[in-house]
Length: 504
Image 1 (cartoon, helix red, strand yellow):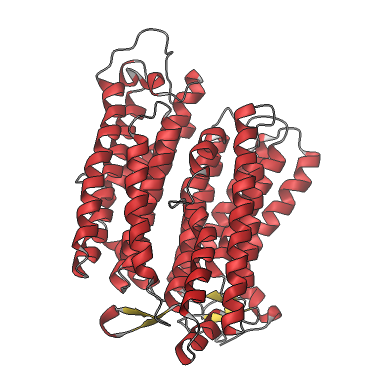
Image 2: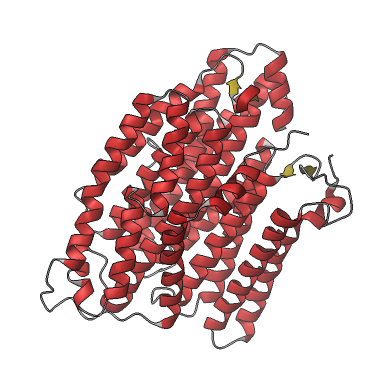
């Protein structure tokens, strides 16, 4: 069912909560002297949006507004957006990313200052744009949502106006994002020219019934992937990530690493699966119009994970190391994308949840060390376990071993599902490349663990203390990483329910 603008509003109350919170923050910024209270308002708004989004997932759409929207979903705003299990899944992850980033911001020394109203308002605005990315069902809506997120991300990256590194990162992000965005919309114009429509379902129907020029369609898809690949930091559109992750405030780095990447994967999966492919029997998907884009994505997946891991080997700054690690994990996630099956989709969704836990936790430990010592380099972690930071060091070891994919941690289960989907479709060489890259990543992850536990402090690193605010989030993330490695059935069930697109 396709709903009009007025009827669609009732299904957008998570987005409405975020919008209301943004307005309240900007008004309160003019009245409140204690600017840290604005962070509490933002945290409350993001948490409430998470609760409402979870309600969509667990209680169904019919309980929201009568029987207008079916259990499988419906089109909103005259088919510009879609509400289905897939969109709700990503909105839950995005809301969790916002909650985590705001919680980190409240405990970060980098965020403190007179401009917190703008900071938290723009952070919620970026989250709102990511919600729209997850629900986009039209090329124009996808472009506008991605641009909304990009523009707010540029501002957040350069939040520390008097920090040269932050300003440089924001400028590089802006230039590269502008080029990627222009390339993407040019590719979208090619798709519009080939099919005569911007609606995802109508594009699919046109490709199924017609016989478009294969070369033109392939060029269009490559151009569009420039925009999507930039969001997920896939090679060769990854070059912005190390500098931006290094220069941005640590909470924003974590937000970009987990939230922005998840939103990019939502756009990527919804466009390439139900738009450019056709669901077949047994959970298999088949490409349309004779354009074999999965082979291109397979090469990109292998190159992305390999380059990310190799570039991380010699990094001395932990933020830059985690940035290259994030690029590698984009390659791992793409493994599930290229196999063109429901199994691969489920593996990707599950891995994004796992990635959220371990990556956000790793950046949180970096922030704790930076708060106490002002250092983000590897030497700043020397002897961390012996200078008051035993708990952060243990938690960091858990996150790093999970990122490697060692049992019995959540990262192992996530990679198991990815490799299972790949092997099931007989992509053995892709599985071998993935395993070899996981072995390579073990070196630089263990290098950090060795520095924290085996290298004795020299006396100039400074003591590290863990306050209750950051400690509670650290305990939650590390505990979830451990528990999900032992009991993962609820998250897998959630991913299974969400790996379905509403096709109307």
